[in-house]
Image (cartoon, rainbow, N blue to C red; front, top):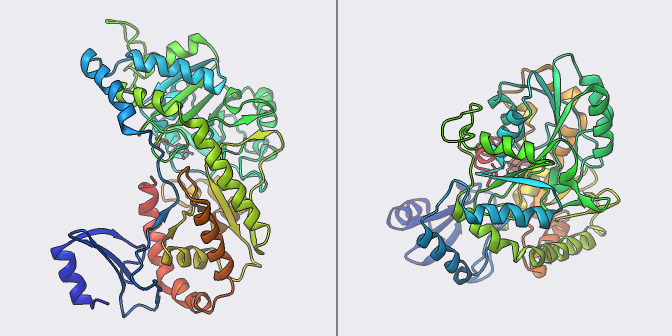
Length: 454
Ligand SMILES: Cc1ncc(COP(=O)(O)O)c(C=O)c1O
């Protein structure tokens, strides 16, 4: 085991490959191809490693990629044609293929999900206040601020963790123009009830469906509900084009308007119809999307098997709850959140850090709650007593690793660790350390980390 000064020397002469969330306790150093993992003797963590054993960290996700050689012909076409962007042939082809695969009428590809969301709000000319959920990735609320709109937070339904339609009505004011719900983790929102409220009050509905690629509800794509839905095709998502996104709409007229907005507002060479943005997907990303689409069903099947395995394990682990999708859902198995209840012997953070000590890097999606962040917490709707279910979810959740290449044997090991952590003496000893110091550090890191969420 290296001492601290040796650590420093190694760090200087080698290359710091990655750091644990508790770098003072655990260091991983890649020195000219040799991997060193050791604990700091001053730390109380005492992580154990098998003799000579190199532990590969497991992350919450790992992007699915097609075989590289299959991508080369696509690149050759791009190199030959020199059409790199501005709505080239791969862009058009992917839009058409995705409409067919997803079962939607119209789809406009975008640079990423964030730009898709900003553009969707512009396309519907939303103004004033927008009702949304605090239990989501920051981008949902940020898209409102970027459009000079005021988010109004409404609590979530504890069963779906999505915007609770029963609570929307009381949050509507004369300034409300839209509802921005999220199909969080790909779980469909209560789309019928949300539509009912939207119809009564004449509100637009934009679904943040960043997690919901391929999800079906009552036999049809969940993307068909509301006025618009947006998708993310980021590297971390079920279907990825490295970076990418899309707006799903119902008719050609809206698709045309979105087309202008994502191309600086240009309708033709000399006509600028709106203060648009550059939100176009490049030919590189679109070509990759076409190839990725050939593998999506196989990848979803692998995710399904992993989800099933986790569920079997959690039937037998007391104190941990898993989400059950609403009846009629065809899931995409994009996330596997667990909720650490009071009758589990460790707190959520104790379990989270114990997992980290064992190189199992889950994520506390979505903690902290958006309503607790500096740019939102002054809003009256952001008060904690307005959002009890969202707070509970944020304080108890850990999203476990799930991605097509994750081995079922790794799922077994993760669940064994969660099961054993509840009883192990070492975990009990961690209680003080975690709650006193590491937790504070981690809250800071999470804030930074959530900026780097991917
Ligand atoms: C709920 C939600 N909305 C929006 C986004 C933004 O998508 P992108 O990263 O493609 O910009 C994400 C991305 O992680 C997300 O999780």
